[in-house]
View 1 (cartoon, one colour):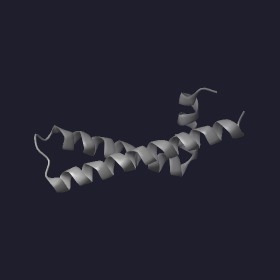
View 2: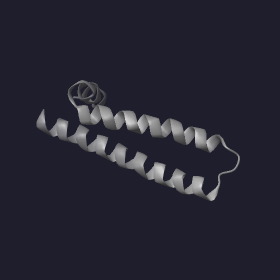
View 3: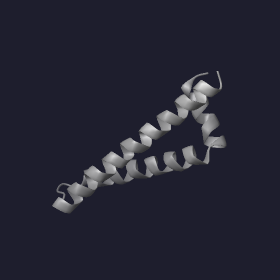
View 4: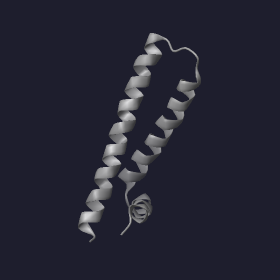
Length: 74
């Protein structure tokens, strides 16, 4: 089964996956807005780094869920 198929299934069957994917998209949008600024305050820089780390954690968790589904359904 292809990864795109697994993602489609998880979007329907897994509340955790749906929530994480939604948060990941929100962080992506917020980071895009932050990056558009010409200058970031030191606090904004810290927040940007925090958001980037959180986004990566979400991405890693989604990948874990995809691998787990693949292992259990093959």
